[in-house]
Length: 282
Image 1 (tube, rainbow, N blue to C red):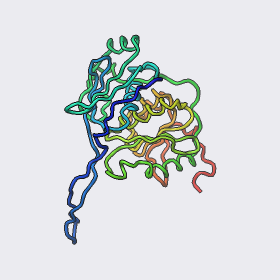
Image 2: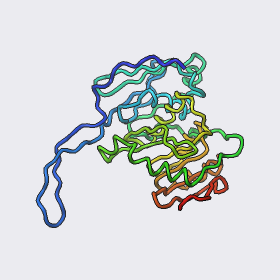
Image 3: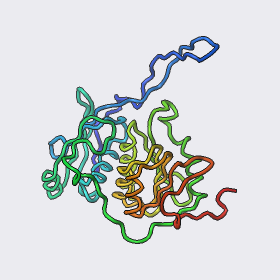
Image 4: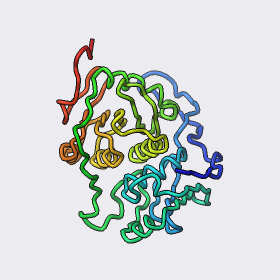
């Protein structure tokens, strides 16, 4: 898919340094220091010149975000439905203009809704329950994943989250191959945004959805399950627990769901038959 180069938006930093004072409990004097905090910027997603969503996001990897968001929100069915992406600074934030193919733009305008304001919220602005996202069922069995690979990916994740290392305030989404090697990591102040950025990057790279698994550093809500399914992946690892609806959707879509993923243990909520445990935790 041809993707024209974006206008430079490097003047908006991923993080900013700000003065801060640390007050210890008990004994000890206050310590003045400088602390990095993540940037949070209104990002206006515009299709065919018509605003669709304003999302609060980190101002990085926005071309990936545009593609991933468009796919997981059902605006496009394939990366080739996008003809180009332009990122332009505006007075109050960033505008991401997404050019769709004529047929896809027509379909989008017929079902247009508006999201506004919240950080990575996947449900703002829907009209009724029928508008809730529902990914299509995927054919065939989910691929098998070893606990060894899951453990290796989790162990490598912290060191690959550069922005979180600086700020301790952003979510991450990562893609690992079946050996547990991290191939792509994206970060954002919004957990949905981080996953959309990851999915966009994977689509741009031509990554096969059955060649690895997704890790998210957040609780596992149903929107994350739906987004993973929209990409076509079948295995989701979450640092925190799933919600009841997330588990219901994972069961329906037959997505292997592993959560409460820590360095010393993981909990399999669905798809136990797809988890290989031999020589895993020695």
